[in-house]
Image (cartoon, rainbow, N blue to C red):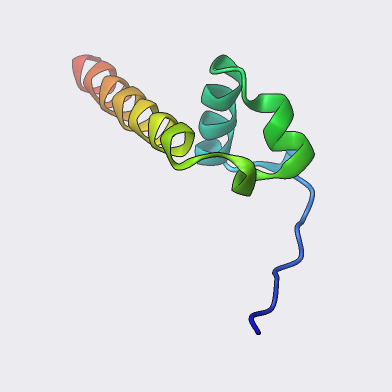
Length: 69
């Protein structure tokens, strides 16, 4: 049998900038409460993929803005 990993509660105050961006996007999609309650594992692959796609889009946008300055 495989061991289940112990779920750690998500600490919103001590997130890395990447984790903050990921959580911010999840909140915009209406998934923030679920993630806080049940963790990232509760999301479907479709929801996770949507978050990942939006993270990539935002990072590219941030790089373009930084290059302009």
